Image 1 (cartoon, rainbow, N blue to C red):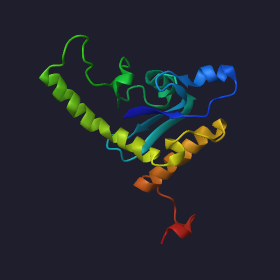
Image 2 (spheres, one colour):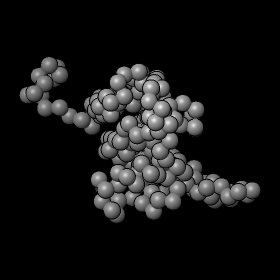
Image 3 (tube, helix red, strand yellow):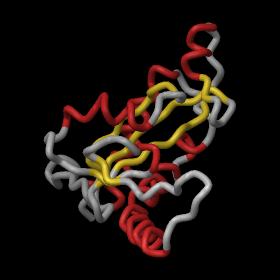
Image 4 (cartoon, one colour):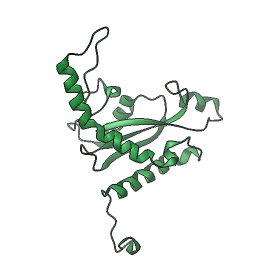
Amino acid sequence: MVDSYEQVRERPGDNKEQEEYYSGKVSKHTFKSQIIILPNGSDIVDVVAGEPGPKSDITMFRENRDNFDPKQSFKGDLGYLGEDLIDTPIKKPRNKELTTKQKKSNKEFSSKRVFVEHRIRSVKIFRVVQDRFRLNPKKYEQVILTICGLVRLRIGSLILPVEIYPMLSG
């Protein structure tokens, strides 16, 4: 399952960098991160962090899909509509309504995809990910990957060898 989120950052001083990171969606300068998890939410498989805010979800996925098997399928939201490797919910047609069967299908789809939203929430529990990012922008990716490592440790998917860290064993 794949999803992405934006985080507000300090306004860049350079005009060109301001234009690159300005997201009209939230009317602020943002970083965008994408997270890929296992279907049951038991582990974080891949994280892409520090992309410019205006970059679309599907573009981020297409730039990084070489890390996975070409036949691997994913589940995503409507931000990934049009990508053949990603299953998405049924989009409501313009000036029409979804049928009851389509609504039921979308509800089943979202009940399976909710785990990625929960995993993003567990990453955003950390204040450095939730609030405006005030640290050096070059350290953003390193900070996000560290937070994801802490989340993996917390959910039990990252097991540290006891001989290296004996203080954690008891």
